[in-house]
Image (cartoon, rainbow, N blue to C red; front, top):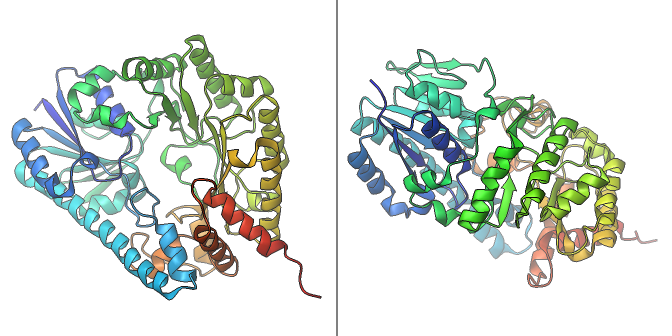
Amino acid sequence: MPVQSILYVRFPCWKIYPGGMIYVADFIHKRHPEIRQHILDFAMVPKSERQRRLVEEIQARRPDVVAFSWRNMQSFGPNPDDDALDVVMNFDHSRKPHRRIKAAFDGLSIIYEYFSNRVNNFRYLKLVRRMLPQARIVVGGTAVSIFGEYVAKQCPTDTYVVVGEGQDSMLSVIEGEAEPIGDVFYKDGSGKVHRHHRTGEFDLRQETAVDFPYIESIFPDFTKHLDDYVGVHTKRGCPYNCHFCLYNKIEGAKQRYRDPVEVVNEVEVLNKRYGVKKIWFTDAQFCSTKPSTYHMERILDEILARKLEIAWTGYIRLNYITPEIAKKMIDSGLASLDLSFTGSQEVIDALTLGYRLDEQMESLRMFRDAGYINHQKLKLYLPLNAPGETEETLRQTIIKIKELYSWFGRDNVLPFIFFIGVQPGTPVEALLKERGYLPKRYNPLTYNPFLIKKLLYNPKPLGPVIARAYLEAMDGLDPSSEYIGRATMDVLERELFQTSPA
């Protein structure tokens, strides 16, 4: 039976541009313009009204396919609505009892919220199956890409669970292919889960610029997402094998590219029709290999040729940047350099980050010399206390950060404090199991607060040192004049460089 209507539902999360869902809906429309589509974003719907809105949309549209997007599933995942890092720091290391007590309640509240969201999400799936017994259900998104098999087991029958990008998988479902295309778990009518592995990568050259007027017509909340960074992706895949990352497994190790002209067509419509000023390139890394750096340069050339007045950023790797490319990046509107950073080659190697510290510092010096010293920011994502970290490597990181202060100005350098979140299937997870830090058969989706704390990796002996530096910095912080990451590194400098008594 041909598909006539599709309803997309984004499960609850904080307000963030729903790029993946928009790309899929645009792709389907361009191949089947006769299909009616609608997007319902629970991020924009009060909690008490979500079930009612879903029921109303189902009754009004009677969709043949209902596609859900699920962003977050683990309770330590950082987001603007709850700060698991702050809670764990206070619970484990605050010297003030009332803060530890408050953190305990806050932590339980976070875990309960994630528990209830997870339960409710499966209830929404089952509600759709009750109301639409013949409809096909599709579930995708970041959480599903990590925990696909777990999700498939909990779903109602006749549900497709898509790992990674979903354009070709969705197309195969609506066209009634005997077997789905892509990396898909399928729960059949008897409740048995089958897995179909991807046999070929989706050709991103098929992905032309999003038809935003069409998206606006099917997504009532579309314009509400345009007041902050809007996500645009330029490629998929990552050839690196960083110990804590899953991108190379979810997207594949081979990099695939969109046409640079189509990428900038998309940016131009967002900028000129909708007034979008901030663009976040959502690739695993906007430039990471020599071919991808050439691809990025073509995108920059297009932005410059069209004189687009935008501020753009994304995760950057500096291995192959030349002075000429650095100048193009700055001239085209680079708002911030966002990169993983540690001042220790030992930690870089332990995490298999795949670059040389001296080359990274030389590239940053090149940006300074190219004029990156005015209002742009240097955002350093510091994997503090990762496996391999010692007091000496922390000292090395502090020294390098102070060097960057002298190059770019202290106010322009933002050290971002984070700890590795242990994800299933990563090398760091295997390492921590081998060392006995994690049980061999632990549940990565546990609700056990003590195990959850372990998944936000910050063990002794450095864990208490870093945490107390963070808490002291928070206590003395004036947010109008200082940044928490810089203040924390200042306290750590005092603690790690103080002279021992004679």
